[in-house]
Image (cartoon, rainbow, N blue to C red; front, side, top):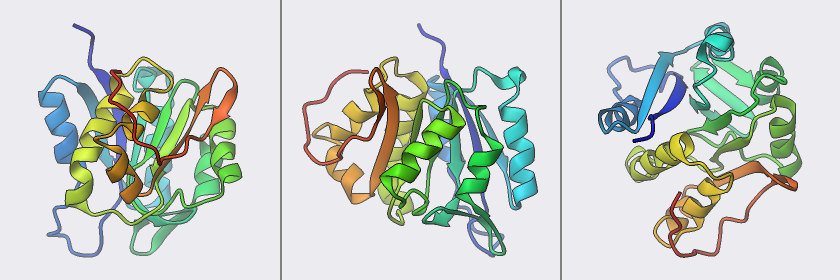
Length: 206
């Protein structure tokens, strides 16, 4: 049996109510119990905290953690770490400049990737990542839970460059991917590729 994929996740604060329990953590824990992933999860509330954990993730010590999840709310091109702590996406990209070879970056909330195709490709090129994906619409926790689970599993364990594209174009998942405003760019043999998330196709194995 193949070793489970490795995932690094930083999660922002979801509002001012400290009793609020919304989190991506249960999804990660379930996938780990199913022996699909091993993960590191850290909460962040300020840009300094985010940069601290990014520097650790991008060090040689954690080179095997190829999936980076940013479970952080935000608007187009902006990450909202907490109520009064925001970070421009371009600044985040500067921190990761040429440091993400072989890694996949998943912006798992908000409308952060409601940006131009050129800006999306620039993130891929500047960071050196193999894939950048996320959402263009504000997503509901319940609606996105199933999609999130299969997507993280596919990111962590798929072997083909186009495996995520095949997943989100499959008959079962294409309508939900479109409803959630999912988009992506990844490297294939011809350079950066931004697939259109419209036409459902038959399910293709990873």
